[in-house]
Length: 249
Image 1 (cartoon, rainbow, N blue to C red):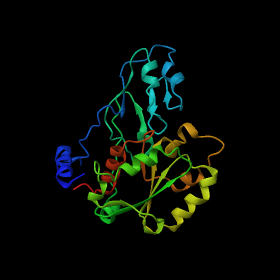
Image 2: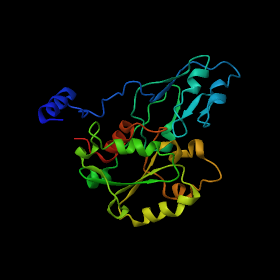
Image 3: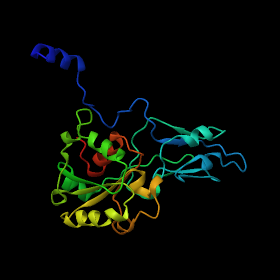
Protein backbone atom coordinates (compact mmCIF):
# COMPACT_ATOMS: atom_id res chain seq x y z
CA UNK A 1 0.00 0.00 0.00
CA UNK A 2 1.39 3.37 -0.99
CA UNK A 3 1.96 6.15 1.53
CA UNK A 4 -1.03 8.33 0.44
CA UNK A 5 -3.32 5.30 0.82
CA UNK A 6 -1.93 4.57 4.28
CA UNK A 7 -2.53 8.16 5.32
CA UNK A 8 -6.12 8.03 4.08
CA UNK A 9 -6.77 4.84 6.04
CA UNK A 10 -5.21 6.33 9.18
CA UNK A 11 -7.24 9.53 8.89
CA UNK A 12 -10.45 7.56 8.36
CA UNK A 13 -9.85 5.65 11.59
CA UNK A 14 -9.64 8.80 13.68
CA UNK A 15 -8.22 8.70 17.21
CA UNK A 16 -8.71 5.13 18.51
CA UNK A 17 -7.39 5.79 22.02
CA UNK A 18 -10.07 6.32 24.68
CA UNK A 19 -9.56 9.75 26.19
CA UNK A 20 -11.38 9.03 29.47
CA UNK A 21 -11.13 5.41 30.55
CA UNK A 22 -13.18 6.08 33.66
CA UNK A 23 -16.20 7.26 31.69
CA UNK A 24 -16.05 4.63 28.93
CA UNK A 25 -18.98 2.21 28.68
CA UNK A 26 -18.36 -0.59 26.14
CA UNK A 27 -21.37 -1.19 23.92
CA UNK A 28 -22.90 -4.64 24.35
CA UNK A 29 -20.75 -5.42 27.40
CA UNK A 30 -22.30 -7.45 30.23
CA UNK A 31 -20.95 -5.71 33.29
CA UNK A 32 -21.95 -4.83 36.84
CA UNK A 33 -25.20 -6.58 37.83
CA UNK A 34 -27.96 -4.79 39.72
CA UNK A 35 -30.26 -6.63 42.10
CA UNK A 36 -33.91 -5.63 42.43
CA UNK A 37 -35.22 -4.37 45.75
CA UNK A 38 -38.42 -6.40 45.75
CA UNK A 39 -38.62 -9.70 47.67
CA UNK A 40 -38.38 -12.95 45.75
CA UNK A 41 -41.43 -15.25 45.67
CA UNK A 42 -41.45 -17.66 48.61
CA UNK A 43 -39.35 -20.73 47.91
CA UNK A 44 -38.09 -19.48 44.53
CA UNK A 45 -34.53 -20.61 43.78
CA UNK A 46 -34.59 -20.28 39.99
CA UNK A 47 -31.52 -18.04 39.82
CA UNK A 48 -29.59 -20.15 42.34
CA UNK A 49 -30.32 -23.31 40.37
CA UNK A 50 -29.29 -21.70 37.08
CA UNK A 51 -25.94 -20.33 38.30
CA UNK A 52 -23.05 -22.58 37.16
CA UNK A 53 -20.52 -21.18 39.62
CA UNK A 54 -22.47 -20.96 42.88
CA UNK A 55 -22.32 -17.17 42.88
CA UNK A 56 -25.92 -16.61 43.99
CA UNK A 57 -27.68 -17.17 47.28
CA UNK A 58 -31.37 -16.59 48.02
CA UNK A 59 -33.39 -15.34 51.01
CA UNK A 60 -32.05 -12.69 50.94
CA UNK A 61 -30.83 -12.46 47.35
CA UNK A 62 -27.07 -11.92 47.00
CA UNK A 63 -24.60 -12.24 44.12
CA UNK A 64 -20.87 -12.75 44.57
CA UNK A 65 -18.96 -10.99 41.79
CA UNK A 66 -15.89 -12.96 42.81
CA UNK A 67 -17.58 -16.16 41.67
CA UNK A 68 -19.81 -14.80 38.88
CA UNK A 69 -19.18 -16.07 35.34
CA UNK A 70 -21.31 -13.25 33.85
CA UNK A 71 -23.22 -15.79 31.78
CA UNK A 72 -26.60 -14.12 32.60
CA UNK A 73 -28.26 -17.50 33.15
CA UNK A 74 -29.59 -16.14 36.46
CA UNK A 75 -31.14 -13.10 34.80
CA UNK A 76 -32.86 -15.24 32.19
CA UNK A 77 -34.12 -17.74 34.76
CA UNK A 78 -35.50 -15.25 37.30
CA UNK A 79 -39.29 -14.92 36.87
CA UNK A 80 -39.27 -11.55 38.67
CA UNK A 81 -36.42 -9.96 36.69
CA UNK A 82 -34.57 -9.32 39.95
CA UNK A 83 -31.11 -9.51 38.38
CA UNK A 84 -30.08 -7.22 35.55
CA UNK A 85 -26.65 -6.80 33.99
CA UNK A 86 -25.57 -3.25 33.12
CA UNK A 87 -22.75 -2.09 30.83
CA UNK A 88 -20.76 -0.68 33.78
CA UNK A 89 -17.21 -2.09 33.60
CA UNK A 90 -15.87 -0.63 36.87
CA UNK A 91 -16.18 -3.46 39.41
CA UNK A 92 -12.79 -3.67 41.09
CA UNK A 93 -12.54 -3.82 44.88
CA UNK A 94 -9.88 -3.76 47.55
CA UNK A 95 -11.93 -5.86 49.97
CA UNK A 96 -13.23 -9.32 49.11
CA UNK A 97 -16.51 -8.77 50.97
CA UNK A 98 -17.32 -5.74 48.81
CA UNK A 99 -17.74 -8.05 45.82
CA UNK A 100 -20.91 -9.53 47.34
CA UNK A 101 -23.85 -7.55 45.98
CA UNK A 102 -27.24 -7.28 47.64
CA UNK A 103 -30.38 -5.36 46.81
CA UNK A 104 -29.69 -1.67 47.25
CA UNK A 105 -26.00 -2.17 48.03
CA UNK A 106 -23.42 0.17 46.59
CA UNK A 107 -21.19 -0.90 43.72
CA UNK A 108 -17.76 -2.19 44.78
CA UNK A 109 -15.06 0.44 44.94
CA UNK A 110 -11.29 0.56 44.91
CA UNK A 111 -9.79 2.35 47.89
CA UNK A 112 -6.45 3.91 47.01
CA UNK A 113 -3.51 3.02 49.23
CA UNK A 114 -1.64 6.24 50.13
CA UNK A 115 1.77 4.51 50.48
CA UNK A 116 1.34 2.81 47.11
CA UNK A 117 0.11 6.02 45.52
CA UNK A 118 3.30 7.76 46.60
CA UNK A 119 5.48 4.93 45.32
CA UNK A 120 3.71 3.83 42.15
CA UNK A 121 1.41 6.69 41.17
CA UNK A 122 3.67 7.62 38.27
CA UNK A 123 5.41 4.32 37.53
CA UNK A 124 4.05 0.82 38.09
CA UNK A 125 5.54 -2.40 36.73
CA UNK A 126 3.48 -5.59 36.67
CA UNK A 127 4.33 -9.25 36.13
CA UNK A 128 1.47 -11.53 35.07
CA UNK A 129 1.32 -15.24 35.93
CA UNK A 130 -1.31 -17.59 34.53
CA UNK A 131 -1.90 -20.22 37.19
CA UNK A 132 -3.99 -22.77 35.32
CA UNK A 133 -6.34 -20.38 33.53
CA UNK A 134 -8.09 -20.82 30.18
CA UNK A 135 -6.23 -17.85 28.63
CA UNK A 136 -9.32 -15.61 28.38
CA UNK A 137 -8.19 -13.33 31.21
CA UNK A 138 -4.69 -13.24 29.76
CA UNK A 139 -6.00 -12.04 26.39
CA UNK A 140 -7.96 -9.21 28.02
CA UNK A 141 -4.97 -8.18 30.14
CA UNK A 142 -2.82 -8.06 27.03
CA UNK A 143 -5.37 -5.72 25.44
CA UNK A 144 -4.84 -3.20 28.24
CA UNK A 145 -1.71 -1.98 26.45
CA UNK A 146 -3.20 -1.77 22.96
CA UNK A 147 -3.96 1.49 21.18
CA UNK A 148 -7.54 1.62 22.48
CA UNK A 149 -6.81 1.54 26.21
CA UNK A 150 -3.08 2.44 26.24
CA UNK A 151 -2.50 2.02 29.98
CA UNK A 152 1.18 2.76 29.38
CA UNK A 153 0.38 6.46 29.05
CA UNK A 154 -0.16 6.39 32.84
CA UNK A 155 3.22 4.82 33.52
CA UNK A 156 1.78 1.31 33.96
CA UNK A 157 3.62 -1.45 32.08
CA UNK A 158 4.09 -5.21 31.94
CA UNK A 159 7.56 -6.61 32.59
CA UNK A 160 9.09 -9.97 31.70
CA UNK A 161 10.78 -10.65 35.03
CA UNK A 162 9.27 -10.61 38.52
CA UNK A 163 12.53 -9.05 39.70
CA UNK A 164 11.48 -5.88 37.89
CA UNK A 165 7.86 -5.97 39.08
CA UNK A 166 5.95 -4.07 41.75
CA UNK A 167 2.74 -6.09 41.37
CA UNK A 168 2.03 -9.75 40.69
CA UNK A 169 -1.11 -10.09 38.56
CA UNK A 170 -2.49 -13.59 39.02
CA UNK A 171 -5.04 -15.30 36.79
CA UNK A 172 -6.42 -18.83 36.91
CA UNK A 173 -7.57 -20.92 39.89
CA UNK A 174 -3.99 -21.61 41.05
CA UNK A 175 -3.49 -25.27 40.29
CA UNK A 176 -1.16 -27.55 42.19
CA UNK A 177 1.20 -27.68 39.22
CA UNK A 178 1.56 -23.88 39.28
CA UNK A 179 1.88 -23.57 43.06
CA UNK A 180 5.69 -23.46 43.11
CA UNK A 181 5.94 -21.20 40.04
CA UNK A 182 3.68 -18.59 41.64
CA UNK A 183 5.64 -18.73 44.89
CA UNK A 184 8.97 -18.38 43.07
CA UNK A 185 7.69 -15.35 41.15
CA UNK A 186 6.39 -13.72 44.33
CA UNK A 187 9.58 -14.35 46.29
CA UNK A 188 11.65 -12.86 43.46
CA UNK A 189 9.80 -9.55 43.63
CA UNK A 190 11.39 -6.75 45.65
CA UNK A 191 9.52 -5.04 48.47
CA UNK A 192 7.18 -3.21 48.45
CA UNK A 193 4.97 -5.42 46.32
CA UNK A 194 1.31 -6.34 46.08
CA UNK A 195 -0.87 -9.07 44.61
CA UNK A 196 -3.77 -8.59 42.18
CA UNK A 197 -6.32 -11.38 41.68
CA UNK A 198 -7.88 -11.08 38.22
CA UNK A 199 -10.97 -13.02 37.17
CA UNK A 200 -13.37 -15.32 38.96
CA UNK A 201 -10.88 -18.20 38.93
CA UNK A 202 -8.17 -16.25 40.75
CA UNK A 203 -10.59 -14.68 43.22
CA UNK A 204 -12.59 -17.74 44.21
CA UNK A 205 -11.70 -20.68 41.98
CA UNK A 206 -14.69 -19.86 39.80
CA UNK A 207 -15.82 -22.66 37.50
CA UNK A 208 -12.56 -24.54 38.04
CA UNK A 209 -12.38 -24.73 41.83
CA UNK A 210 -11.74 -28.39 42.60
CA UNK A 211 -9.20 -30.98 43.74
CA UNK A 212 -6.64 -29.83 41.15
CA UNK A 213 -6.44 -26.39 42.79
CA UNK A 214 -4.15 -25.40 45.64
CA UNK A 215 -5.07 -21.91 46.81
CA UNK A 216 -2.91 -21.80 49.93
CA UNK A 217 -0.73 -19.06 48.44
CA UNK A 218 -3.73 -16.74 48.00
CA UNK A 219 -4.91 -17.43 51.52
CA UNK A 220 -1.44 -16.70 52.89
CA UNK A 221 -0.54 -13.58 50.90
CA UNK A 222 -4.00 -12.10 50.38
CA UNK A 223 -4.68 -10.02 47.24
CA UNK A 224 -4.57 -6.26 47.68
CA UNK A 225 -6.86 -5.81 44.69
CA UNK A 226 -9.68 -7.90 43.22
CA UNK A 227 -10.74 -7.56 39.58
CA UNK A 228 -13.89 -9.64 38.90
CA UNK A 229 -15.02 -10.97 35.54
CA UNK A 230 -14.99 -14.09 33.39
CA UNK A 231 -12.95 -12.67 31.82
CA UNK A 232 -12.74 -9.06 33.06
CA UNK A 233 -13.00 -6.35 30.43
CA UNK A 234 -9.73 -4.42 29.95
CA UNK A 235 -11.56 -1.35 31.31
CA UNK A 236 -12.36 -3.25 34.51
CA UNK A 237 -8.71 -4.07 35.07
CA UNK A 238 -7.26 -0.74 33.94
CA UNK A 239 -9.62 1.36 36.05
CA UNK A 240 -9.02 -0.79 39.12
CA UNK A 241 -5.25 -0.45 38.80
CA UNK A 242 -5.34 3.28 38.11
CA UNK A 243 -7.62 3.92 41.08
CA UNK A 244 -5.57 1.74 43.41
CA UNK A 245 -2.23 3.46 42.81
CA UNK A 246 -3.64 6.89 41.96
CA UNK A 247 -2.12 6.89 38.49
CA UNK A 248 -4.98 8.83 36.88
CA UNK A 249 -3.86 12.29 35.83
